[in-house]
Image (cartoon, rainbow, N blue to C red; front, side, top):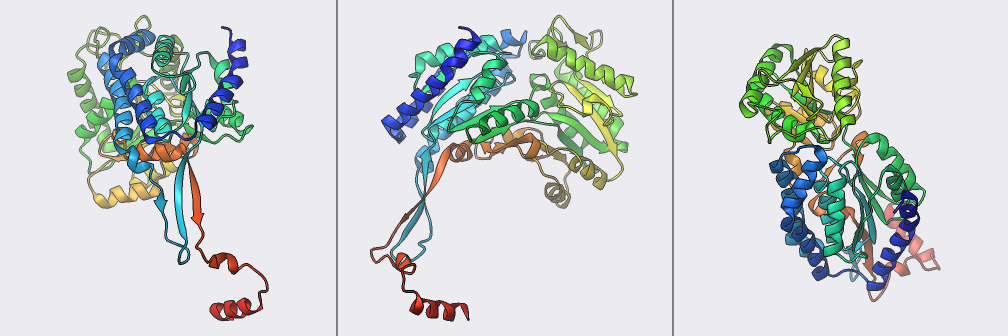
Amino acid sequence: MSSTDISTRLPSIVAAMKQAHLQDGPAGVELRQDRLERAAQLLSSHHAELAAAISADYGHRSAYQSLLADVGSSIGALRHAQAHLADWMQSDEQEAPAPGMQARVQYQPLGVVGIISPWNFPLNLAFSPLAGVFAAGNRALLKPSELTPRTSELVAQLVERYFDPLELQVVLGDAEIAQAFSAQPFDHLIFTGSTTVGRHVMRAAAENLVPVTLELGGKSPVVIDTDADVQTAAERVLTIKTFNAGQICISPDYVLLPESARDAFVEHARAFIARIFPTLQSNPDYTSIVSDRHFQRLQALLDDARAQGATVIGLEPQGEVNADASTRKLAPTLVLGATDAMQVMQEEIFGPILPIKTYADADEALDYINAHPRPLAAYYFGNDSARQQRFSERTTSGALVVNDVMTHAVVESLPFGGVGASGIGAYHGIHGFRRFSHAKAVVVQSAGGESNLRLRAPYASMQQQLEAELGG
């Protein structure tokens, strides 16, 4: 089916799902649990096929990484929602505004939610939001990335087996389809991807006043304070910078550290990579860059940094190349002396390249972060609680992790989302349930209707009483 045909069908698909939502009425707890269970079973029963499809799309991707970060984490989100759903669905009783009255917040399904998911975690970033969407009692239409076509096609096939098309449906296609998708009159739209594309998605959604959740990434900083253990910091930062070859929206994008700690960081990074990746090009644990275009973009970032005077240090094993276009494997690479004039400091890297900047004092590091768009995550290494608190208070980011990197993403009870240029809104756990629900204010008037009577003329006697209460 052509892109034009799919785009033409989208309005009727969304309309049919909306009609089914209205006709069937709000999904009860049993149906919500069942939808969550089917989604978990889809992933669990087909985990090997899904991991193989992702690897084929990448050229090579570590099977462990796919099973952990895509399959396992998604099942974890779905199971967390199942375990807590009955409590989440309860109305929040509020303090009675007057004797005999009742007030509560009732969480109501929105209807049909659109999900545009990216290529870097093609299951996690589709099924983790879906956990909140289904828990809230909604139906969903999913547009997965065209950059992982085998995975997207397999997900579409499996969804057809496990779900009625009016519950969950997958739309395949390229950027043209994504553009048409984002223009549909959903009851909510969630997009995960670049800030540039996020602006287009939000603009298209605004035509129908569709509320959006945007997960956009940005340049997540690492600050290593003077009292930090540099070896620990280097190892924990490089653990995540090499996971999925750094192709993660919350991967550390650059490091700020004292000048006196720079050489130690480099040496600890070199030793750590040599230990965990004694080989790279033939190592099944090391993931390829997803496409030729992305591989070439990363090479261009390094070329630009070199041309502008940076010291580029490849951490490839002895006897191996730093990068191989045939495998699209790029070794972890440090960029010393990075400046804002370099492209590597101007855009989200999305690869195993780590710029390193030095600072003279803590205020310089804070000022640098605050002079740039607010990141999806910030990472601080240091053991002094007062300094930790100061960093937390003086910087604004989607999340903050102290003495580690990316840990917050696997804590389902925490909101996951950005702020400013790194995104709008958050989900995971109860935060996803509420994000994809309408919090309806419900008031039940007392039998005597006292608050209503206060608005009824004549006002003279009530005005005298009110003036006395106000001290007039």
